[in-house]
Length: 90
Image (tube, rainbow, N blue to C red; front, side):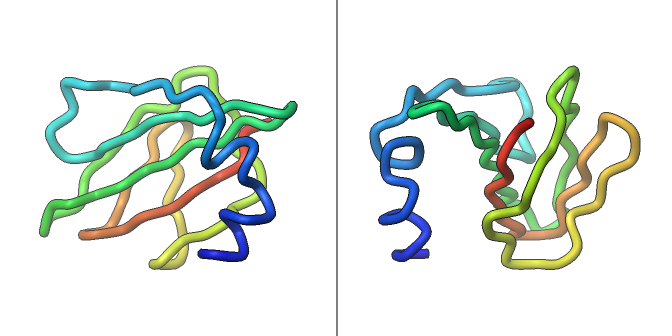
């Protein structure tokens, strides 16, 4: 994680933060955007996991994911309990 943060500090540290779906009690989701890159951060703090609707966002490369795999069905991402991931957006 330290290497990832260092390699992509323009987006992960200094990038513009945008909270997504603030009303979702199960998934903390936000984007970071900077230096021509945009990433989606999804965090589940619940023992039952949760889901997040991607809307028009298109997932690219997974940069980090503590539980494999990331489950995507159409525009819905389902997170496992305590799953955390950072995914580059296309």
